[in-house]
Length: 262
Image (cartoon, rainbow, N blue to C red; front, side, top):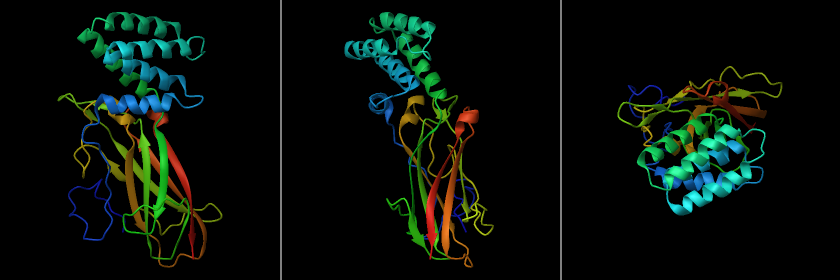
């Protein structure tokens, strides 16, 4: 039976050697790690305007001279893009001018602008791997199993929706589910892991200290035993992550992995 530790915290901890769903939550990545991740994403070929705008907002929030010069340079690359409005450019130039005075209020607004930009980005899925080791992760995209084997899936995701908490930290709510499809594209009825839920207060999930922390890659696990009577052949494991906090249609993402049963 699949682990439901993330969605049902009242259940006892899994026995030694049994898989347990968990999310890797950075202790406190902070703004510096967010900037590093945004710089890497913005440097990619054909980086979307929303990513560059997010980096500009973070740099304005830093407020130091080097960050502001970098923000100005990035803004020049955005001019003329059809998805970048003149209003955004004007407001950001004004924020740049005021931030030179290290105005704390401007920094607060800049951080809020970064959060709003991240809200407008779709959830991003990174690597997705399967393994037949209990909780282990195999770097191969496809791996062979036998009937009654455990299947463990690790999925990376970032840039999910967040909601402010009264204590100044940030909540999120994500659901991870999986289904197994045969060669005709039909779901295997004997493979139905319950959706694992990730939100603060469940298992090892903790609130975020800053909305920009969600740009860090988070890793989600889901496990399920294959049916004992599963026939040999090729299958597709479809993993779906649903963001329940503010992303709406941008919050449903999925990945498919090849799986062979021998």
